[in-house]
Amino acid sequence: MPVLSYAKPFKFTTQEGLPFTQQDLNGKVTVVAYFFTTCKGICPKMNNNMKGIYETFITEPNFQILSHTCDPETDSVAQLKHYSDSMKIDPHKWVMVTGRKDSLYQIARTAYLLDDPKNSVEKIEDQFIHTQFFALVDKEGKVRAQIYDGLKKDEIEKLKKDIRILLTEKQGNGNFINGIFNNNP
Picture 1: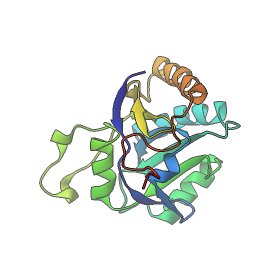
Picture 2 (picture 1 turned 30 degrees about the vertical axis):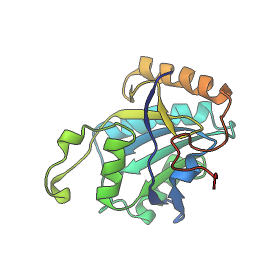
Picture 3 (picture 1 turned 90 degrees about the vertical axis):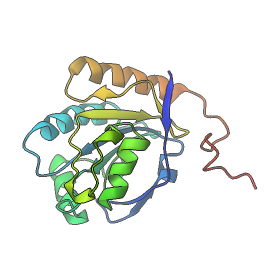
């Protein structure tokens, strides 16, 4: 599977109020998405499809889902926790994060390739990412394969197959290969 990009440094807060950083991706195959809890459009459909992925891989210790809010002004830790609880998901297996809007959006555009950087407008308050696309990150922080449409059943099935492939892939030296996150002195 081709490498499209790499995870970049970040620090967000989970629905449990805990810090979540790029280092929490290390050693796990991660499906990445963006959504917001008050969405009445594509987000419920995407999260329903994501729940199918979650249920398929719930017993896999080296798998997780990472959903970022695209509306951090509304999606506080408490709001994400309420949403997560209503979905009846394990918050350690399906992590929902909030943080600074500019940081959330920069990672979407530059690391996960879920939004075109050209969509960035001058003022962050004028920006809004609303995308149905999912990214797949391998155990070493590499964004792999393709960007998947979270509304298309055939792409969800392809994503599940690609997850299985990455779960069996041997990890290199246990560190992110892009040199940013390694333990070498």
